[in-house]
Image: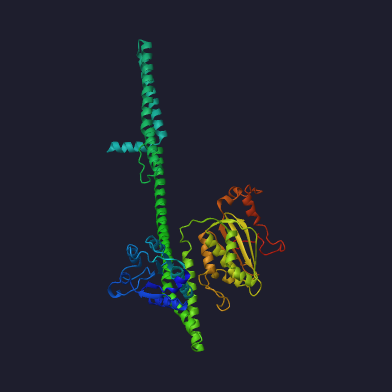
Length: 147
Length: 419
């Protein structure tokens, strides 16, 4: 089982409009030598296009994990989450809400919309990259996912 | 017109004059009857008939006078008194605007006038107290609003400041991690300052956030073991305690009305200060507690560098520091936060200015109702009976904790600086 997970490169879709956080996530991937591919889209509309392979994303891979920010321009992370979880094809992809929000209502709403996890972006850089490593490790190495 | 005036004049007559007038009328009538009877008797042929006439006349006169007296008394005293009583009752029930008007004997009208004077005075006092109350309420509302605004400001600012700061801190950390040693020494120093500054700002903001959060939780203060709070604070500082070889001397600490996380913060801040400001010696902290109903009064002392009494108040000001940062790191929030927490629970904290060897903080926390000794409410009794074994245990905590140092400055009977 471990061999199987290790050998497979998984695509991760990050939906975040904060270039700094995206860069830090890339740094984390690089630092921990995470081989999984990171794709980034800056808003919810493009995220749905990416997942449905429409528009400019005709050749987009199907991600094994989605990192979704709550505060996004145009369609909020929660709207995107709701739509994903209503789509029978996409609802099996684990979604981690990775966000600066610590608001209790965002947490509650995320889980009631079937988010798989809610993670507040740690303030400290070391903790931030550690969080990315742990998310990656948990969802893409430790757990077994369908398909 | 003149009739009314006469009635008013009669109304101003005192009761004694009215009764006197009636008795005088009776006397005059009797005299008249007797005189008429005498004349009739002298000229009468039939004496007994004449006598009968006199007697009947006197009797009729008496009857008329009594009826007259009764009517006059009723009109001038009883009826006005009854009316007055009804109106006074109305005023007493709270209708202070009702003016008492009554006609009758002078006693009754002057009583009514007195009631009116009293009523007007009450009205004035009431208006004044209402005005004062309104001013007070407006001030309270204003204070509450500005406090809420301030807390909201601190909270929002702390949250919103976190975001850009996270970037500054993260990328300067990243810069350090990536390029330390690859540029020249000066560049390394610049980066180090940037990282240090960002980290300190983060610490300040987090502290500010913690400070603004005190009292924002919806939790009600509950029974909390200060023993448990101290134990947790010691556990949180275990590393520093071990490093410095600090000793903490304490007996059983009582139950207080508080919130556990906040009480832990109180002990942790005080303990951390004692460890930090030990002056190079092995820190020694002594915690005692005594009754100061309705509070428990804690004494928290160390043998460190101490605090100049001139700064006894300033140390509790937010971000106020007395020492160089290079010598003693910290944001300067500890004691401000501690004071805010203790005051939030209804207690007080102050520095004991009489303590010259080290620093001694005294603070009070509300005693749970069940711990209050019954005789403390009714007045001091010769002996305290403690039926509750827990209460007995709590009392033990007052006993001097260090038998080797009977003259210890932490003697629980120390003086309150306010006393």
